[in-house]
Amino acid sequence: MPLPNLSLVLGGAASGKSAFAESLVLRAGEPPAYIATAQAFDDEMAIKIAQHQKTRGTGWTTIEEPLDIAAALGQVGRNQPVLIDCATLWLTNVILGGDDINAASDVFLQAVKTFAGPVVVVSNEVGQGIIPDNTLSRQFRNAQGRLNQQIAAEADLVVAVMAGLPMVLKGNLP
Image (tube, rainbow, N blue to C red):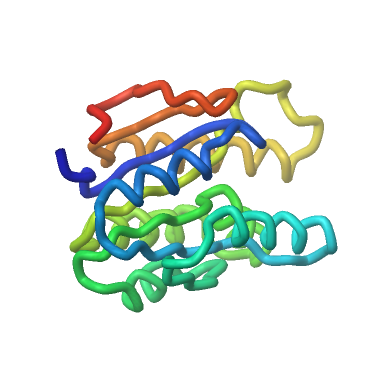
């Protein structure tokens, strides 16, 4: 069974979602591309990025693009499987940059829906915790929930990962 056109892998922090998403992309059997949305604003994040790169290993085409997913996808081969890690950091970049969240989300969705090859999007599930105590955090949580729902509605496969274990919410694993 081939990798679906669009897949969403959700999970909490350190749930194993990135590792699972990487294994999913590798099932496509073609040289994969990795679109990294993280930015290393501090040493802790730089270490986390380096760990992801080391774990991922060689063989991936890596494109570092914090905002313009459509442009990043334009750098990928037509049928090359793509991992976007992650929508949560992408949305953080949009919000902190002062961009229009709805317009940016529409462009993101259009780009992943229309890409010729399989796309796997990693995103954090942020709605299972307490209600944040400040406006920015609530705005982020609500925007992330909407974005996750929009991606999930378009996706052929949606998987939640908890403790490294995948739970299929929609579709079938290849």
